[in-house]
Image (cartoon, rainbow, N blue to C red; front, side, top):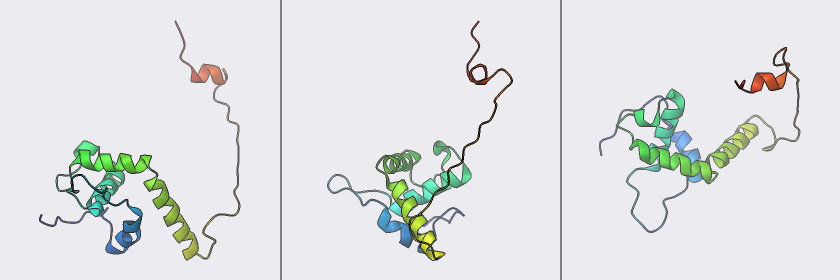
Length: 127
């Protein structure tokens, strides 16, 4: 397959080295994967970066249904959350902090929605 031109949302080689071990490997048995994991991730990042619809994914990426299936599977199995956690820990270490936060701040605020009150503002009027 011919190498496509890069998009601004594509992973650099350095970024891929960080993400590669965090992306689930192909399942054993069954049909071999047609598309490289890096291209799947690049396609997901393209959708996230541009805000395009899945069906509008450029044709030089893997098919949109394939990309969406991987995205959805990785969302369900916690892959994206694990990636987020690892990257957050790496960023915290790089600025000299502990990998996990040791404190949290919670703040609450009451906002009046309308002069009529909350139920009138959040429910449809019935006729």
